[in-house]
Image (tube, rainbow, N blue to C red; front, side, top):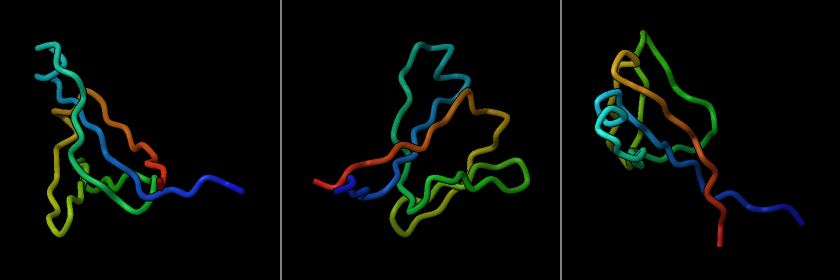
Length: 69
């Protein structure tokens, strides 16, 4: 039987964070593994809240599967 996926967590590292030696941090969850990018902004959903981060300040981001227990 296959692995069940509970959801997808969005990990983000800004350029300032990278220069400071910080690790990527979890900034939201979503139901698919596709990034939502509109007009140069990464759209991040966190519960009922939705916000955007300009791509110009992002060093890197990932969308990682979270397995159901």
